[in-house]
Length: 243
Image (cartoon, rainbow, N blue to C red; front, side):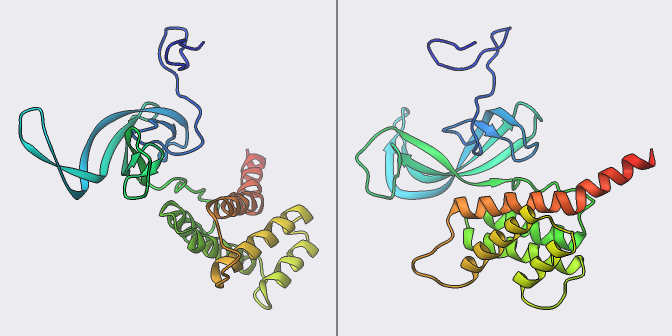
């Protein structure tokens, strides 16, 4: 049920339930996907410390001058796994960063970087060298380096083709060969081609066609599904058949 005043979900015992939010949590939005347990959850704010001061001062209630800040570090505890998440947050005024032009509004802090990085727990069925490259793609994505992330996703794809015996020729040819030999079906071959093309955009300068956050996020999802099909599902089926 919903609480009429706050519009928050309430359980049968009137406890507050996690709100749906596809993004990661911060002190402005203390709910979302936990980067530790990958579950939708709400978070308790444990405390915040200044990360960057600006040149301003305010007078505190005790009459002391207090420096104002533009970035802060916030520790939050996930209510599902009960582990802390660290967020570096930027000051906003309304919906605009405080260091940009804005028309006023409520001061709040929104996440820039999170620790731990999301999605770092990978299956042991994935070859270690491929795990390392995929983790780098995710790390650069978490650092908002979307071009670099796209390049590393493409590199992950390249490593998969090598692991499956395609060591010669351009990547486009290797993908076609994997489809032809049945390692990939046609749909996964199309996904692999999309990863290759967006990765190329990240690697080569193009003033018109840039790699956006949505592009980098999409091809990470594509590469994860590709890896699940090529490595994880066959290993799970093999283990099940041994029982």
